[in-house]
Amino acid sequence: MPKLEVCCYSADCAMNAELAGADRIELCASRQDGGITPSFGTLDWVAQHVSIPVHPIVRPRGGDFYYSASEFDVMQRDIAQIRRLGFAGIVVGILTVDGHIDIPRMQQLVDHADGLSITFHRAFDMCVNPILALEQLTAIGVDRILTSGQQQTAEAGLPLIRNLIQRSRKPIIMAGGGVRLTNLQKFIDAGVQELHSTAGQMMPSSMRYRRAGVNMSTDSEADEFAHYKVDSDMVAAMKAAIAG
Image (tube, rainbow, N blue to C red; front, top):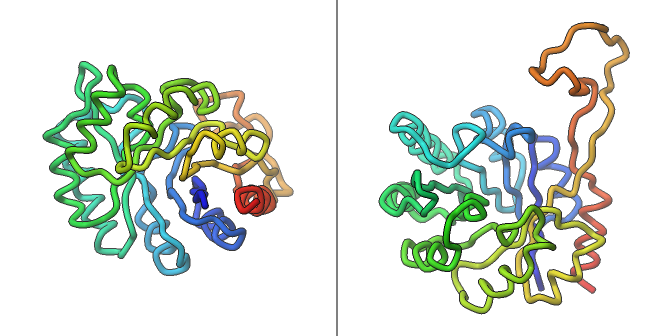
């Protein structure tokens, strides 16, 4: 039966995802950046309170996936901390300036992870040649690839996802990017064995007092009295649909 991984951006969301029946959690911070490495406090709390497998993302910043020497050093330090806290795996990815997998650095991170499960994230969707990238990641020994099939959504990218599945037993090809209850069956019919979804929605803040005219975000249009939460009912519904 296909597994459901839920992308969580807070400790509360991770707990809710587990209670709703998620098989695994990708733990991130900063949804607006597409996910960066969570804080130590979040990692420590989740390690102590969530029992299903949790794979924190190791990504020092938003933006592209070509990293400086200092950023790469930070990634290695984060992996060491994640390993010490007892997590099951990590989610990571590095590209060269020319859009290929950075093989030497990825191999270093795999070695540094020392047995943790390795998911190569959607940096895969930004690489030049996905078939070559699959071969390279297979040789490095990653466990899965999270991909939207190099399209804006995984539904639009299903032709490439099918192709990758046909070519690979390992890494597992995990579909992510707009995966939701309404299109879940399309991925199951395509043979996808692992699905990645945020399964969430924006929720209003509990704050009663709201100071007008002051904004903490660089995005002046951002609603700072709303935040993203995992929808427990949606996770449960997706799990029920997967179970048939």
